[in-house]
Structures are given as structure tokens and as C-alpha cells.
Image 1 (cartoon, rainbow, N blue to C red):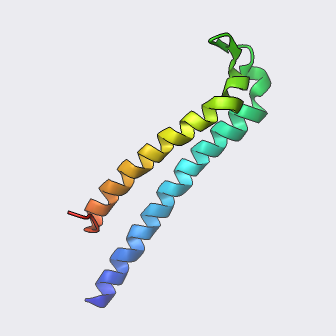
Image 2 (cartoon, helix red, strand yellow; image 1 turned 135 degrees about the vertical axis):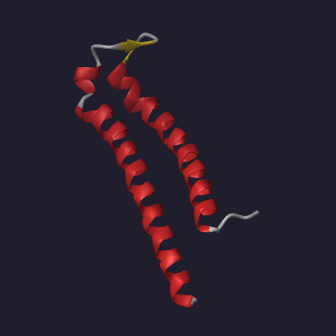
Image 3 (cartoon, helix red, strand yellow; image 1 turned 60 degrees about the vertical axis):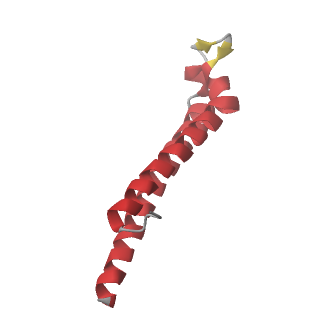
Length: 88
């Protein structure tokens, strides 16, 4: 029985790390890619009078990070239910 619990725990953390990697990859792509690497290309587009590259560097990456936090919470709640770690 202990081996089964250990396998379940290992699978849980493996899936958790997969979610973290994907979400942090998205955040990195938005903050570094859109805010720094592709800033010049994005500056040709304007949002509210500001260049899009500037907007991503100053505010967009923060908004994406906050959205990713909510996505992570939702994914983790589903993962907890899947593996029986929910608080109900």
C-alpha cells in the first residue's frame, strides 16, 4: 500500500512540475520576449496611445503573471481532486 501511495505522490508532483514549467515558460515568453526581444516589432501597434512593446514591458507582463496565478490555482484544484488531495 505504501508503494502505491508513493507512486501516486510522484505522479502528482510530476504533473505539478509540468504545469509550473508551462506557466513559467509562458510568463518568460511574455515578459522577456514581448517586453525585450520583440519590443521593436510590437511598437508599431498602439494600445491606448502607448506602443505595444512598451506596454508589455511595463504592464502587460504583470497582467499575464496575475492571470497565470489564477490559472495555476484552477489547475492545482483539479489536480488535487484527481489525486485525492483536495481539502473537502
